[in-house]
Amino acid sequence: MSVQPRRTTESASTTDTVRLSGVGFGYADAPGVLRDVNLTLPVGSFHFLTGPSGAGKSTLLKLLTLAERPTAGRLELFGLDAGFARRSSLPGFRRRMGVVFQDFRLLDHLSAFDNVALPLRLSGVRREAYADDVREMLDWVGLGERINARPPSLSGGEKQRLAIARAVVSGPDLILADEPTGSVDDAMGERLLKLFQAMNRLGTTVLIASHDEALAERSGAKVLRLERGRVRGGEA
Ligand code: ADP
Image 1: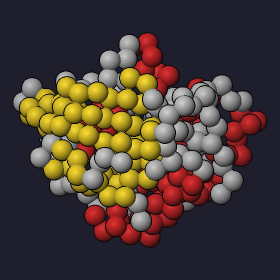
Image 2: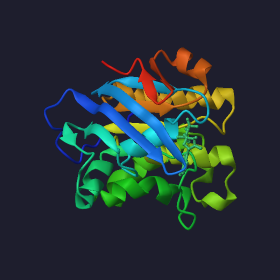
Image 3: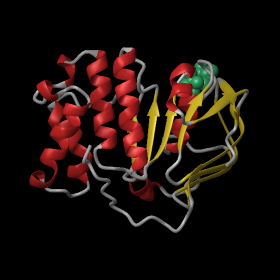
Image 4: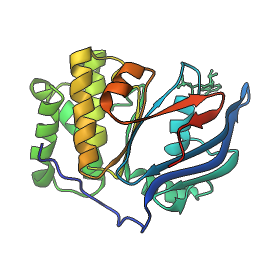
């Protein structure tokens, strides 16, 4: 695959993409989902985050995408304090991430091509410069024939693959994926895993939340386990 990471921001001189210490978070009706999370993801590392349904994997990803703020502890992203970052600085953090949401969050009025192109357009890349990368990425995830289709006409598995293509196309510093193989068969799951591994070889830090422990083991990635509000194996 020839898609190259496009860095929009200079990396701070840090060896860790993510660093959480003593992080806690809960909801009004589900307090203490995360109690004391210590987690370090060095630059260029590849981890799976496993744990039973309801353990808090999606919640931890919400903290990392800055959709929620920790109620205790410290959250650093790219060497910067993100836990207390101002709202105005959130887009800067998010531009450095590619996120695969469990509910995909595709834009229904845009074609598959334009959904994947969106992060590149938003970072100011011209269409002539990204069109081949977008087509190549759609081919890679098996959507080359559906390039003009809009999300409502795609199956669940196709939407998932489109969401993954969008998350990786800009070569972000950090990829966060929530159950990214939940809607595809095993063969496609292996193919998508190869895509994450290829991005990781290009230097991207990858964290995949999945209840699929067999896939996590086969990936060769370091496997973290979320249990009773803590991450086992999370400290570098
Ligand atoms: P996982 O991704 O491991 O399945 P979640 O992070 O989705 O776990 O959920 C962890 C716990 O937090 C569960 O008990 C869930 O019911 C609760 N929870 C998740 N989201 C919310 C929310 N928006 N409001 C209240 N409780 C929530």
